Length: 177
Image (cartoon, rainbow, N blue to C red; front, side):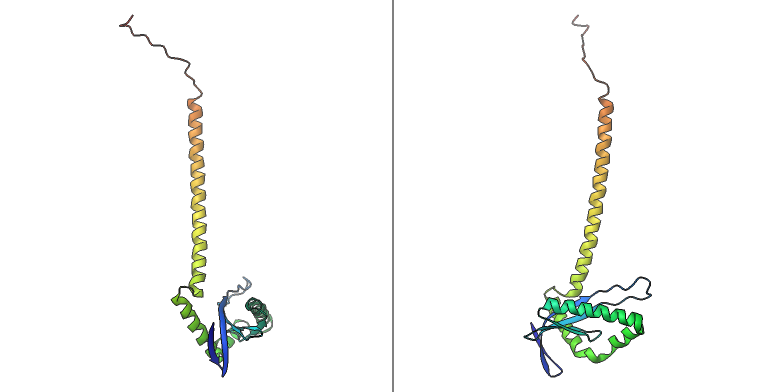
């Protein structure tokens, strides 16, 4: 837990997170990663979106986070279809009203990085591991296919050789006769 003072109020931050949201493929832009903090307010948890200033609460960290994700998706859809779209997202996100929260986020992220637990590397690590697993699975599949092809070829060769069976060999030396 990390206690910070923001706007003359002490906040006990218990988590940080990132949201990666894909927009409709027909849209010509991407939504960048969205960041959030979770604080413990004794009676409830509060999740705070750093880009949009959205706030949600819940009895647990997970509930507050889930509600923030739902609220963020609703907000994005509203701006996409009823607002000014990407320009509005940029305008709100680049406003400096969340500067103190960003400082807390970066401080916590650096503290986590010091222990190799930061979100960015965890996300990168998960992606890298998924790519490596896909590669390994494909190599195993290729080896398995090639091994099966080699086994099938060996079996065909054996069947060719076994098509002619040697009954017996009798040899008599003419010297002995």
